[in-house]
Image 1 (cartoon, rainbow, N blue to C red):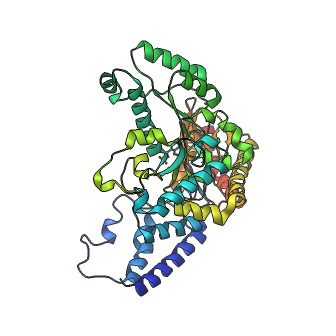
Image 2 (cartoon, rainbow, N blue to C red):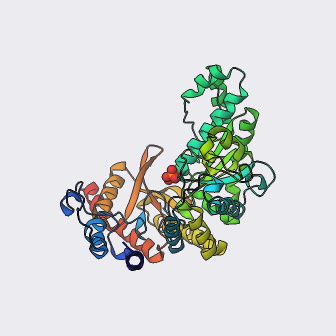
Image 3 (tube, rainbow, N blue to C red):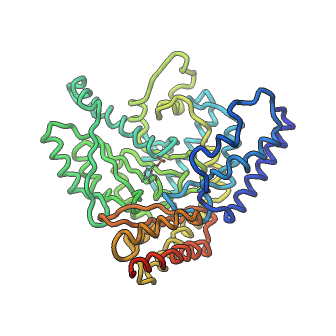
Length: 453
Ligand code: PLP
């Protein structure tokens, strides 16, 4: 492919993407294909002869689209959002165009330096304490990881390393820590993890000869968007020398709005803080921001080789030492584009609108005596069920999913089956919330009828 063909292919693809997204409301949110559907649609072997890009692009609609779950459909209310915006998409394109691998400052200074600054922009936007930022004195700083799961693992490994270094019989203790036991701790009636629960768990671990070293607190849990109590957990972690990692994968984006920042009171106790602009801040996947103490990360991940060394070493971050892989993409470009083209105000409008729409949905549920709210609307999510035995809600849920018009996920809470409703797409409007509610109501009569028979 030469540059002229690339221009034509690229422009046609941009048109295709814009048409796809602007027309996404008209597609069923869930596909109707069965496992193995692609096999008969494409040849068994890669083509020997080069093919025209026009034919390739045509096949997207024929082969790919029938099997796509439309995460950006305004009728997608499952899981949590994954971000998508035009500036984010263009940022991805440019990143692919430059195609650098910025594992050290020297391998692409712009890739490192834009990321450093973007992490500071983000940290300030969500109101993190100064010591989390690169622009402060000391070890503060941020890095883009691929996912919240990766950030949690990176922090765990750094916590292990810090604990092993602290201990005076390191070989023996690193053996103990080698395979880290994880404990799931209970929460209170609001699904919040509390300081007293942590203290009791630490005492029990120590009694059993274990060395606790890492605590994960969540701000905006996946099931019910609950918030753990950092103000209580933080001092317990400090007292016991435990690394406190804060996972705010979804809800962290809301802290760009000052009215939601109280949820992260106590964040100053954290050793690492992570949230995903790729979930709720309109930056396309993958972009998971992780901040705080860079020295601990470098201590845990630093591997020096002659071929990796460069003359400016030590003067700027070499991000390979802050993460698990060596290679890394130029992900800060899309963040830069989104933050500039929406502006903080535009992003706050997006968050506030989605929270308002979730409240609207909750009000519809509350006004209908057949339903009950299971957990009150929190950020862009709420959960509900039909009053009465679980099978009513289960049947309703199965019918909804089988029609492919709206997509929701189910969960259990307090042993009761419930349906989660999350406002996910940036295209979701009031009329889509009403459509979802009508779909839900349309499916309950037969269920109730069965029940009364
Ligand atoms: N943490 C929380 C609280 C989440 O809700 C999720 C996903 O929804 C994750 C972590 C996982 O995120 P990732 O896909 O970035 O690993």
